[in-house]
Image 1: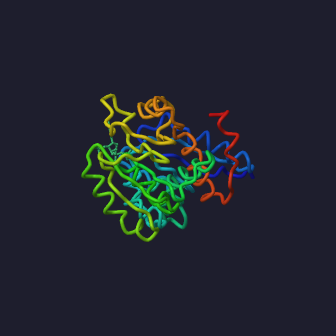
Image 2 (image 1 turned 180 degrees about the vertical axis):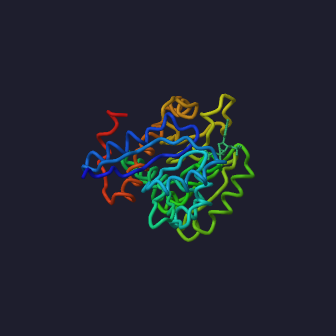
Image 3 (image 1 turned 120 degrees about the vertical axis):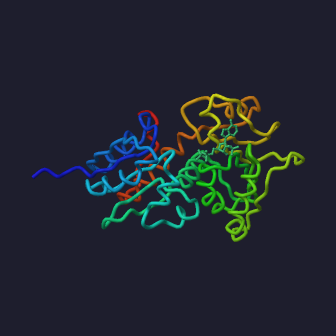
Length: 269
Ligand code: ATR
């Protein structure tokens, strides 16, 4: 009898350009695991029903991407501490008819930064954006014990809400959490763009005259206005492809209990 492939998928909308199937198939090949990894286009309105269908069809794990991560957080039966704090789920394991939600985005970001020799302990970090993407990585950023995390956003009231939400975890970890003020003249060790500004066609609104040693855009695949600014400032910079790969590796580890080698994947992507 032939062994059936393990069934996995990535769900989002739009989803046609997702690199997740390629990444997971490559990881699986390192361990001789046979995977069936699909891309499934789902809108928010059909998400709950689709999850229930996939459960019935014997899927073992699902990656969740935009715009469904917060909805997944609401629907999952059980959550990891990370997912609960971030209010975001990008990795679902299906076990005993239950949806177990976790998030590996923050871990993906930290791991990629470490690979790029950027450690966060005692550093000053600026996070631009106050939506799902920025909140999704705050738990892991704080856990790295930076000296300070500054927040800013086009709609600044959302940064204040975000600071209030993360205040207690930051305090427990001795991390100063501040809203960026235009009066301050700080050179950040790391500036992270967690906005979706590069997706839109309109103008990109960031604070003027930012100064930082390393600029990281969580987007990947194109020269964003943020990275252009980094280049103009003669700073070091990176897009978020490494974060994508490392969040996938962390999800792979949750499902298969194996740590894939991620160095060799960039030629394939
Ligand atoms: P995501 O889940 O990707 O974070 P989101 O929750 O819609 O998506 O949040 C998008 C973030 O990108 C917000 O911080 C948003 O700023 P506002 O809160 O002011 O809307 C930010 N953003 C989107 N377009 C932007 C632009 N053109 N310039 C600057 N920030 C932008």
